[in-house]
Image (cartoon, rainbow, N blue to C red; front, top):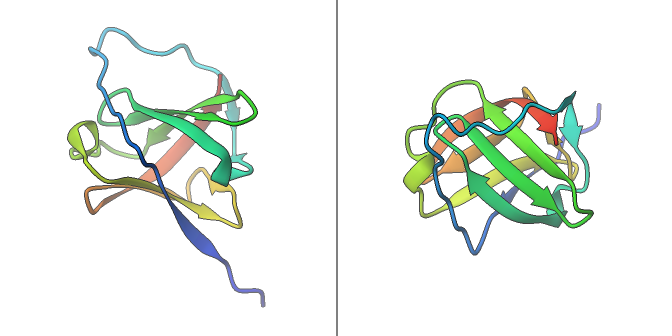
Length: 109
C-alpha cells in the first residue's frame, strides 16, 4: 500500500478580505481537484466559507468549505493542505490561525 504524502502550502504574503454577503462570485464548473497546488499565486477570503485562489497558469478557483471557518476572514496565518501536489475536495483543508476547515467543493471559474 502506498503512503499518502500530504503537504501544507503556506500562503505568504497573505492578504485576505471579506466581501459583503450580497457580492457572491458566480458559480463555475465543479471539479474534484486542483493539480500543481504549489503554483498558487493569489488567495482571497470571500467570507467564512469561501476562498478564491489563482494559479500560475491563470486559472481561478472557488474553494467552498464544509462549514463556516470563523477565523478565516481575519486570519494572520493561512495554509492549504495538498496531497501529492494536488488539492482535493472532500479530503484537503484550509488552516486559518490553527483552525482546520475541510474543503467541501471546488469550482473552476
